[in-house]
Length: 402
Image (cartoon, rainbow, N blue to C red):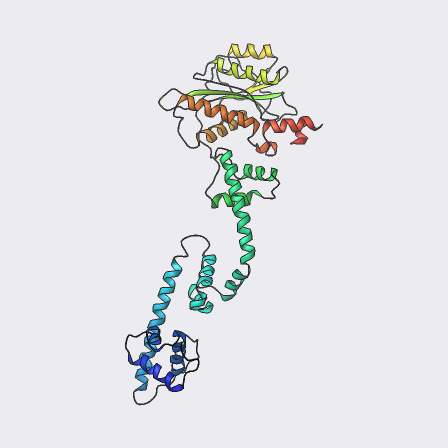
């Protein structure tokens, strides 16, 4: 065990020994003498006329008889050692800056290495203020608590996103979390989703399925781009969209959507676009509602909807036909929007389904979930059936409930 108190002669000899050995390090000389490295360093600084702990290269006035040369050599060797040590510090720090918040990483590095190199020196080298570091350390407990909460939210967001088949974006996930009693806004959800690499499905390019027949009679426009309704089973929109299948002819989906609740009241899938396709969809809507008597059915000018057969089915069901302007997708925007959502949330960026069977199964699952589970922004982030159930329980109009 080393001495607690060293004589002045011992200190002077230790300094002289260090200075006499070119290339020697303070650590190696201190090891030879059995003293602490910092102790020897402080003796050398004291011999140079500097305060222990100072990193300045300033030396005292050179002494006579060649001592100035030795002092300059000692200062140069010390500066070289400091630069080598700083290089080592920066190499270690580089491992902390791979990603994330740069300030947080700097503070963490100072925290991990302060005992060896000192807070002041590390902060100076990394370009942060001491007050910033101490504030960061003082708030560590609160920050850790927030990180735990954030991790829990991230796990729940990932689960909701997974349950939606990877289709939900921040607004719908926010609504899901709020229904669970969590007080959270969509901006925070969006930030967490970016952090964990999640996003909703985006819109795909539309494929044309409307083939008008100029020789057929057209119905008047009874809705005038007013895609709302005061009650269910009063106004519907319908359209056809295609389902691309790799290496095979596409399938086609015809829909009948209630404008009050956005419920998909009826739909049909076939490998053709003949009039039977839209007739089957309307018949399915009739089975869902029990009766369509007095309802409006708004469509585009596709030949299926302008056909005599479809007109006869509408008349027999008590349905009044309505059509927008030729070539104007805005006149059937509600149906177009539905088709776009269906495509982007089932194909998810793919160009086609691998087989007809998978296309039918994916469509069946999504169209069913659309009514029962998928949240709709126009319905206060509720599903169509949940919205209709809420309306039945509340003696108010649909417009007021929305």
